[in-house]
Length: 461
Ligand code: ARG
Image (cartoon, rainbow, N blue to C red; front, side, top):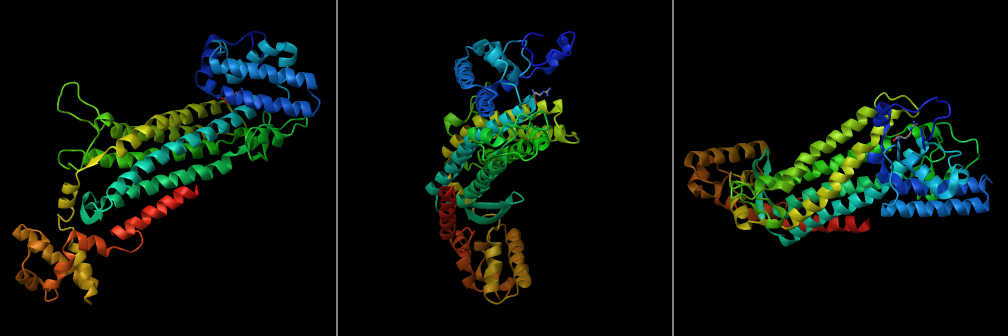
């Protein structure tokens, strides 16, 4: 069992079947730089307790630096026989520092506290990459909103025409959701910034090593207060996985709209050539593959989260080997989002909106009926009655196959004495939009204010 981290109490090496099952280097090798950083910090606390001499510490740091360099260039890679990143790197360290010095580093630490710490370090680094990517999508939505400050479109509920809104209002709705994902990533970090290093296998170390010194060197705010929790807790991973899944769901929702809007029937947007795909058989096709992959990947990320939570459910404390299964779901979520986010922001940024069509459709489907009802309320009519009257007007329109503004003064009068010709002042898209000027509303002034509020919130981060 050459180079293994255990073996003393075993008469023979592991079976091939066990080794094949046990192996994790194919996915945990990406943690190697973090493992080496942890080793450097660990060497320093061993030195602080006189468990390494000055010369041994500098020899150890030098060997770790060289190992890090070789890992970076690919000159050092895990062997087929290596079980995990920790074992492979200890072997690499011993090759460089010699067995006497290299063999000293493992004192007072366990793969259990190491892996729990490395995972958090990896997630914290990638949380900032994801935040950049999410910000890219928000920027694309903001920039489209700024390019279309006054473009009306049909607002929908139940996918049916509901009320006219501004295109920028709709786009910014997606931006706000994504801005909360950014907030979540930031808030998550306060829980992730706690280092389990020093927890040992589960009970801490008898060597008097300082977990807070290691934590500081590795960029954490503090060390965990309970070594069992430190080695067995994975809620910080699960929360990260949930945030990733939420980001993917938010991307999927905006993507679903792009998919609908790009259909012939909607014809609201044209996708840019560089962010759409063709068909191998149908020459005319231009497909929204990015948006569809975003929609598809949301399912995958929900699966990653579900898999991780299922692994954790009913797992007794402290470390169990089941926990090795924690890594692939979170790595997958990160890998998927890191390729998806730039594609989605590019797709959104290059959408070409057919604003004439949006404006033409905005009032159709009796989308101004609420305006009629609210106008009646302003004339002193109780809303229940106003709702009835506006509903009657819609029914008359359906009978006559026309829109609300096509009704004559006589038609209005026949529906209700309250429907005097002045009602026409709200039977325009502009009047409808302008009337919804309170905070959060769709009036151009209110949308300009929310755009500013969003930018201020993003700038404050
Ligand atoms: N490779 C393991 C993991 O990913 C860490 C090693 C702990 N193994 C052990 N037998 N205690 O979780």
